[in-house]
Image (cartoon, rainbow, N blue to C red):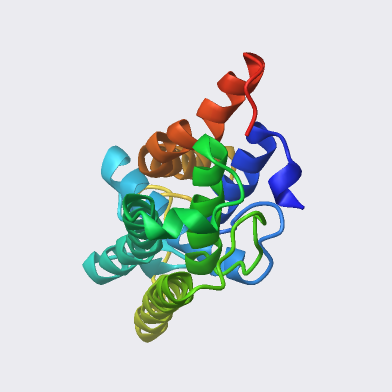
Length: 216
């Protein structure tokens, strides 16, 4: 069904998964995806204002930041790496239902869905081949456990720490509009820096070609 959507609608579906399903439809997996961005935002906010980064009364330190960055980078790396490898191999393109940027969107969605704890399909791509079965399986294994394990590590570290007193002078509040804006900014910036180039040669390019009367 997704294969019949307009290019920009397809972009929204792909990007929602690539951001860790932290927005529409991200029940369950979206929760721990958001936690990674919250921890990263708390750390960056603390650096900017010179206050101790804390979340839920627990200090956010080096270990939590390492795990949050790992949880964000691993699925992103898997999506981009396997998409690049797939379009570089001649035999894999025979599985495409469409050519051009739309066909690239099919491949990009497949690996985004596998690594992003989604499980849906863009359709149009015959993924039931030895290459796609193995590549998507590896993407699923690394991409999904690459988020679950860092989040569990963060939870374990925070649970072992003593709860500290939250003060207006020494702590940065994680409640209120300022933090929400910062959190949204980190999500948009990280998502844009990571996936905007690859989305440009996929659904965005297809959109402009569609405006010129070219379809795939």
